[in-house]
Image (cartoon, rainbow, N blue to C red; front, side, top):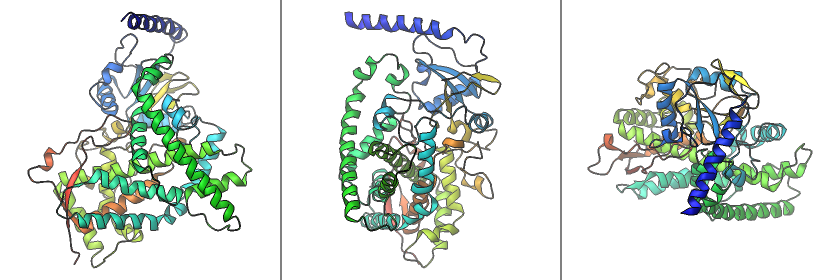
Length: 498
């Protein structure tokens, strides 16, 4: 008890000393308005009880589309309107091009040497170029079509065997998507699938920017007293060993096949080829490669599987939408026993269902935070250097000034609409915008469209007896990603195409 009070007193004393120092020189700044703050914790208390993106949207409705808040020791600006998001992500893209460093990202991304969270600079430019031209180009994504189709065949077979039985769609879809990412990345599945999924779940929770130790970075002891740290380290070491084994296996295979300069079959082969070729300003290390694969798994698995689950959830809640989507798919593929990726390009309503799902269930509702590297003005307010800037993409995509019946699931709103998620329509930026926009959109979304098309074509879906569609639990987990807290469980019934 005595130790507790000593620590508490030190925290309070440190707060006032640091706060006094930080206030100097800032009094002349015209900072954005915001809610009142409490000593030490700032505005953390106002996030309790809701996922951060919803809490921030509610605060923005009271305090305006640009707010200055204090999250522990982190000075933060939250942007919640499409107009100001455009200012931040387009006009001041370079000034806000940096990323924050957290305990989790520094550890599991090998010193933030990935692409998503790497500091803005020449290393990031080099890796972004490699990603765009070598890893996630349209040609490369298309080359993985047979992998997607094979895994989908396995899924359809499983669902046929489960016809009339209750299926946990979250677990089933996540496993299938994870298999696709594994095989595309390494040419095979890996043994520690469960640990990988657990690792990604923990990464989403601890790297959200709201992990208590990251809100008080000057109090280093918080990293050690947190129960998350030891668990994260355990999972990290397991996956690090897995990555080492895979790298060793690929390197040995390359030595054996050194005379073969044909097209590489997986993403790791591509990176090893770039690494061994040399000539880069920043030579690629094995740790850099591991960090990039954490990005690929985090983005490729969660985004796709959660979007599929949310889309099925919304369609089961809205039978009219389900029927319309099924009618389109079954008419388009009438008489076919197998659907290929090239077949689904003719669909028009299902893409609208996917867009509407992404609008209401933004995969990363708070875009990966930016850090101000050059003082700038947004909405007429000063944004000081080192300020953390968060764009609430969820608030933008549910802004009633831009969306009629903003809270209603209505895919028809995208019929004959030019609004898309490519980063130029700031009311709809589920994958960000600007220089640091997600580079792997196509890698994830191609699976979403293919999976949904076949699930609707081959099966009718219903809830277990006694459960009303409108009573489905739509609660979101408190994480950096938007996932259902309660897994969606449905009963598939095999449909015989005529």
